[in-house]
Length: 389
Image (spheres, rainbow, N blue to C red):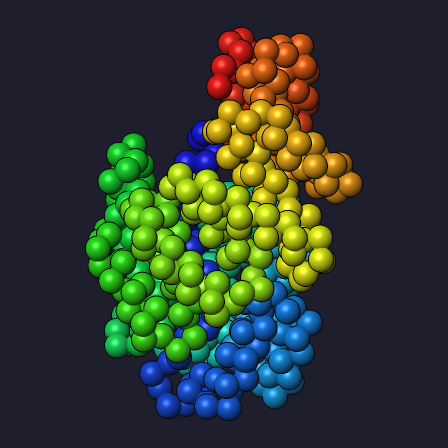
């Protein structure tokens, strides 16, 4: 629980970087070049549809045209980032991601040595540090994540202050405003630590993100994704969460990440039939080996199908999904959260059917696996007191 709270606290800063590059106010900015903009948006379209090879080809071309600019290097770094997002338990792309973001920082630093107010350099250095902080937080490297996040905050907020009319730049400030305010409201124990940072404003944060979504040049997708998450997890607004998710699904129909998010939102708000239909479609795409629909995505879909079945007290159906999840998990090297939670739910389903010995074996297996999402605490609790459904 303490780790999850720390991870959420870091989100105040690290989520600032979850964005594609933004347009800049000065005419000399590369991002105001219409040819660069056209190619960058084309590459981002491939990226968000998880067509990684096509995205790499576009971004490599831009990097060849602009070998010293951090913008082109940043776009290239987004490819390993999205490969990581497709399966956070897989660390095989981490080194490539860190190396790529280091290149961005170095190119930005060279520009800042010539001009400390260079907006391209300020923005992309802040974005690179924030992305790096996000991954380090996901990998539980909290000390280095905090250093990167603190530095990223300064750069991102500085850019927003220098050009308040730029809708893309307001994305970072919008995320900061929302999370800084939300954590103060929801976690009073963190207020002494949060006093080190500027106060946020929940409503202003939502307005700024909506402005980016409506008027931004490069950041519509990122703003839509953040708004979907905020309305799903914090505002508890089903209609708003789905509105932004449907926009993402319409423009990026091949993005497995957004596809699964739609199913999770439906399940979270109790629309289990709709969620099941979505997760079955995810599994079909996985079976067809569609790009991005990897084993991690299939594990997630099977877990939620099992969870929904248990809510209906269909324990046989839940176990069928959980056995398929286990089969997929056993052929992977990484231990995912859904693998651990799936084993936990096997125990819960056996307990609900009155098969205590089988349930106890599953709970003990959970304790032998790495702890994920509080699974160990729940397994210990059910070892003491059987789950009754």
